[in-house]
Length: 349
Image (cartoon, rainbow, N blue to C red; front, side, top):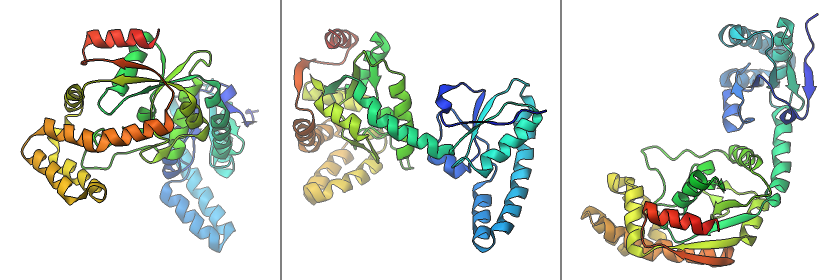
């Protein structure tokens, strides 16, 4: 007889050939178990159609849903499962571990594969993420790298990770946002950030890869990066952590920003549109002054004035409020291989 599906509420304790999310693409796009693939048994429009019918007749909706699921499963068997051997062992889940995941599990088990279904579906996984993010961040000792905009904190932490194998939590990379007007990667489309749920999944995955007996380096971020928020447990531990401040001369900071973020020069019209967001704070005259510097190609003067008027006062205020435990201040004159190598040696002493 073909094997019956297994059921689990703790899929992270086992290894599977594949993790299959059978929810609609829209549900999958909001968040998913890391590493899972999307093989929907109902498309976005089909799910909406069945839901509409269900309000009038649950029985009619089940008939329609069964026909759609059967058709989609047939196509998945042809397109995806044809190449799988007899030792294939997938984990299957849907929204709450109901009809959609069980439908796929039944068909796959009838083929002869050992299938496991996540009881409670994605909701079980989300409960696990929330529970882990309440506890896991508190198990680490954090070292905060702080410094004014343009001191290369992100670059330094990347080098620290690559050259010395230190544990670095790059929150801006996880959030797909550099947290500032100067730091965004500008295109004609809005910057795409993960959803809050996706961010938490990525954060948990990163934290689970760290060794709690070793320090975790992290940049002095706000508790909100773009549109996503840090878990309160992580934010509180970061605020209690010791800080190392990087200081770099203003001229060198300007040069670093212009070299690192060429989109400042390449997209003057987008830059000027971004500056309009600062008009309520600094007034029309200051915005006009910045626009004149941009129009004149006076990029060094523009970046320097923006740093002195906007970024430096804001950052200084946030550091005093959130990261007051500065145990060391390290001065560098420029960014070069020699200065970075010396700086990394000082950081890990």
